[in-house]
Image (tube, rainbow, N blue to C red; front, side, top):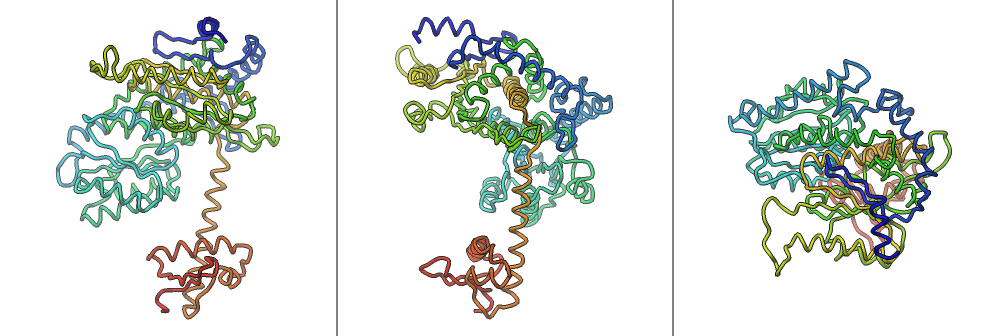
Amino acid sequence: MEKLQLWERYKQRLYSDAGTGLAIDTSRMNFSDSFLGEMEPQLQKAYAAMAQLEAGAVANPDENRMVGHYWLRAPELAPDPGLTEEITATLASVKAFASSVHAGNIAAPDGGRFTRLLIIGIGGSALGPQFVADSLGSAGDQMRPYFFDNTDPDGMDRVIAEIGPALAQTLVVVISKSGGTKETRNGMLEARKAFTQADLNFAAHAVAVTGTDSELDHTASQQRWLARFPMWDWVGGRSSVTSAVGLLPAALQGIDIDALLEGSRACDRSTRLAVTAKNPAALLALSWFHATGGTGARDMVILPYKDRLLLFSRYLQQLIMESLGKERDLDGNLVQQGIAVYGNKGSTDQHAYVQQLREGVPNFFATFIEVLKDRGGESMAVEPGATSGDYLSGFFQGTRAALYDNGRESITITVDEVSPATIGMLIALYERAVGLYASLINVNAYHQPGVEAGKKAAGTVLALQGEILELLKSQNDRAFTGAECAMALARPEEVETVYHILSHLAANPDHGVSVAKSETPWESRFRMSSAE
């Protein structure tokens, strides 16, 4: 398409909201002029379903739950006055607690102010808070955030080592709805050990964000932790960042959570409109449907041209892939839906995978995120008439043009700056786009049976490990190959799993298992070390 024709299409298709500064350009998505009209009946159904969801309908039928993350930034819309009061009271409690910590009224046992913040969670209990912390953090933060977001011992050791002597001034926020999530439970136990080794009382540093009457709620109550904040069953983990899950860490860090909520609220208002051309989330959902054929046939590549948005693609991976990656639709039909998401940041990508995006397999569509404001003050000229930020803008425009010239489609989202309001806006925009797209493809966006299946499988492996250790202890005069161990347990079908468990046990000193390695790995022999 000639540039002047593309310019005309840009003017026809551009969504722009002067109030929020949000713009969405779909001119480089090659759907026909009739596409919006053809999709309008399906979109009207999606708008109606979304309205019912916000009114309190059971939008997650598999778990018989309401879906209420939109109420978190508009409590007056909650279908029950009790819910409105809970949301409002929790927000007030978050602000009051953070203010007391900053003022030193809630302080470390040594009397000093808390200056560090360790957030322990996984999935939605970590990805949202991490994205907000990284995108809005600065050298002037009230508290410096750290994360345990996995059950990797070395990763946790690195974080504790980085905190160092400041552990005595570290506040710990443990986030788990059920309180039984193993990764988070493990992180809490590892953190408690680190505090104990430093002669510190963990409970005097700890705060819980969890469901009422959960394991974690009971632990925090019995051990007299500093505070507890609620998680509700009508807020899914991947959409919980505007609840206490994300707001408490952000407020403690010193981020303006009122502005973040207002940005989300403003975007929610525009994405409720049933006029497609004026609904930015609908335009995103339609673009995804066009690009993937409504079947997930292409991947979504997120390319933010701003360092502060580096973690946005990781956050969106969970929001989009956990919401849309479903084996069956709402009618029980086998559909195997989803959209794969990956990304990094511009212009880093131009020295990484843009080569493949432009000339390799055309199995994707790109989403560029442009931030107009370069920095807080003036920039130096790195050459006559050009700053570093000018180069970043030039690389964004050049890459977008280079992809389009070679038949690669893209969406461009533009915001004025990275601020609490724009981060809240981006979060709300994608939450709504996911909900609308899920309606278009008729899947339940609000459950995650595949994640639960993985947790159950992990539990099975740990149970098998217990059987292996009992066998090795009871026959400590014998060394087993993986196959021999599986046979001795009467579990021959689990031989590969048994072999991998043994290899891991022998690589670590925790359980006293040793290995005599063979040139053929599966012929290596394992035994309890004490038997040598």
